Length: 359
Image 1: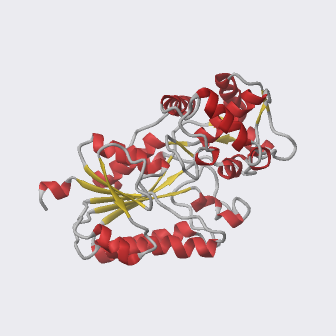
Image 2: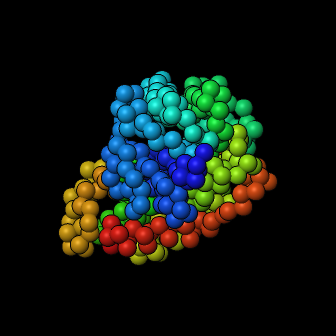
Image 3: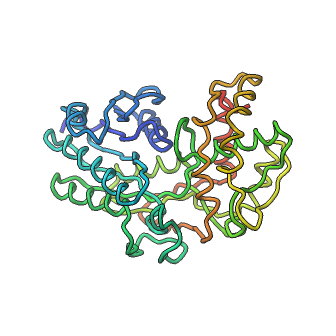
């Protein structure tokens, strides 16, 4: 394998909250980076765009012909209405990806991003069935219910055995990162929510459950996640293992929420007896209010739907179960990175301000 091939990376889902970050980090580290997405826009500088729909096997094969990346980092997934559909489409995308890469060879390692639904169950049975003990450990057995993360892992394992590459699986919690037009972006969602509350003179109400307000929890900084993805792809200790990835600290929302409110200059309220969801309070109200805010603040994106993912934040903040992630396995393998969660949150807020997305 020549030097050029040894420094070539393919990031699948390069426009997402994790894909943008790890693409940027790879470019900074001197890699030749190719970013695959259905809509190859908003890619970091230095990333070569590859536009293809992974559900189209022929288009994927044509787009990746001759690429021969050394490492492949998969951060893309597609959400459907049922878990059966999630399993079908998200295994098909991986199957088409590997079928496109197999003829040319050259792949040494594939890192697959999944998440805590590995322990909590799929969307339609989320956090209600049999659950792993907290803090979540990678050694926990799979839950009995169908889960597209398990199906993705099996597709990865089959391809590794057939194509001869090593693999790693990365189970993140809620990701704090910098991305736009993304389906799962809590920092930007809460920033938009707080800004709307300030505009209307309303309190910044915690939209989730009493349990989630009081439980100890953790999150995942996107920069830390990218560092682990690259570490596992370039170190023998990361090969053929699944790793949790969280910041390494823990917090309670009842502690962090007032800090967010203070940062945005709004009064806050804790949860009600039942969640006062963002979907209910913001879906109809937010578009017009945000358009007005964007106009008088000179913001670059007036469409709130491209900034806020109300449903995703409601899902995470409305859980009735404790979610803490154990990082021992990753640390023992040699990945020692960590982040302060408050610093992570406000760092991303400042990035959004600098980009002209929030005032």
